[in-house]
Amino acid sequence: NKAKKTPPLRVSDAMTAHMLSLAEWAVGMDTNSHESDKTRFILDVGCGTGLLCNYLKQFTSSTSNSNSGSSNTNNNKKKVSTSSSALHASIDRAADDSSSQSVSVKVFGVDFSGEMVKIAQESHPDATFVQTDFLQYIPPPEVGSFDRIIFNESLHNFLNVEDTLRYAATLLNTKTGRILLSNPKGFAGIVTQRAVNQWLSPSLLPNSQELELLADQLNLQLLRAPDTTSPHYLAVLATR
Image 1 (cartoon, rainbow, N blue to C red):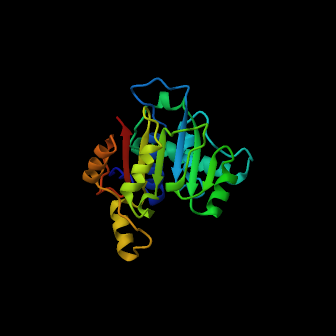
Image 2 (cartoon, one colour):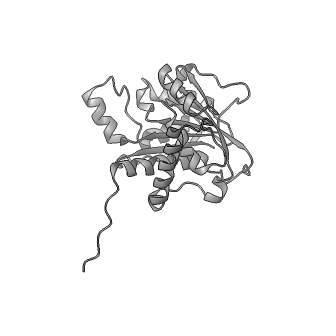
Image 3 (cartoon, one colour):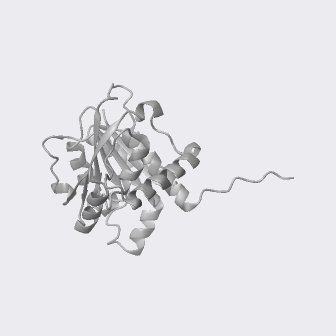
């Protein structure tokens, strides 16, 4: 009897693996610091309905989530947890589990869509979502700066990627700050989308060389370079 081949990941599973990897990069501890008891401030740019919060829950001891007990939120969490277990070996792990589990996070989100922000706030009342242009966003006084700024499927919507990341860098915590760039459609997917309709993708995603140059200009380091051949795009910039 021939051994059965392991079936390839379904599209939904591959997407889950990508989002879990993004979430793990978001909550991963810094190796040069001792911050296990620190609340990590995360800004989700182009937050939509707050989907990222569901994935952050998998790696944090306390995060923004719905206290309403709604069946939709609970079902979403259960679904993600199941996928996390099944895909554990396929995730590109970026942080140590033992340290990640002790991290608590406070999520802030910005989006152009008032309807999206409303849904996000109802689904995740412990987070803070604001309808605004990111380039005009000012952090709350009690936050000051962010440990993580995440662009998940949103960076290509900005007219000028360099100016957008330059502004993001001014909002980073100078010791623990990271900018995470993510897109489940991948580098090639955005190229195709832009070719079909430029209004859907005003900008392309930056490649490794472009990010290296920009990182030097912003006094950041490219912690993870994007793989432009991968079906999913993930890059990480960090303070030096």
